Image 1 (tube, rainbow, N blue to C red):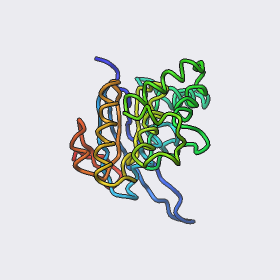
Image 2 (cartoon, rainbow, N blue to C red; image 1 turned 135 degrees about the horizontal axis):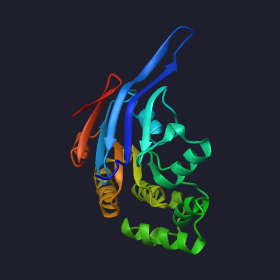
Image 3 (tube, one colour; image 1 turned 90 degrees about the horizontal axis):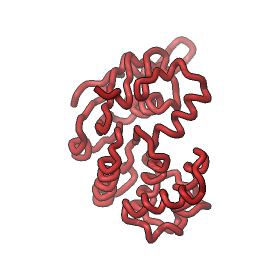
Image 4 (cartoon, rainbow, N blue to C red; image 1 turned 120 degrees about the vertical axis):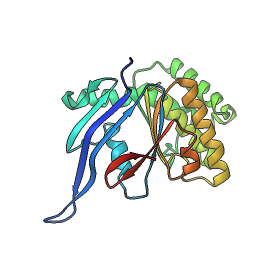
Length: 227
């Protein structure tokens, strides 16, 4: 059997909420995301889903528990190795696109590839191919301000996939769009994920979108339960 793309075991996380109090956000989270599996993470605001995604993506560390990527325990790795893993193995999508405004759509997708050591020609070709897959190749030379909200988020999807990661982590990836655009953009995201065979953990408030994924989990009182 192939190794899970992501495995979380016994993840806890607390934050200091005052001199004598600690706010416990995660209380022993267990989660496995198999290769090619798309898992919905459903939770209200403030429940800790962003914290969980940050821990899963090596942007934060748990108080206790184990994070494994492709079978490797990340707790025992150096900061340099964790950074390299995050850069090459994990793609991030947020509610807001966070595109660099001074660069074109194409350049926003090329830059993370250059940072990961890709030659410019190959990075350009990869960026154009991704823009074509999401149907906005004609907008390659436009800066973010000249793109619609849906187009901006499609570029953000392409940027997240630029380095061909094994794991995609998305935090309300269509939450900033109107319902009609949200549905279209989410369909584009799912097509991309399925086409590339990615594993994905996608946080959403939208139960209709969650139902289109392989499995649905709800974060309640700091623990994950099936929806």
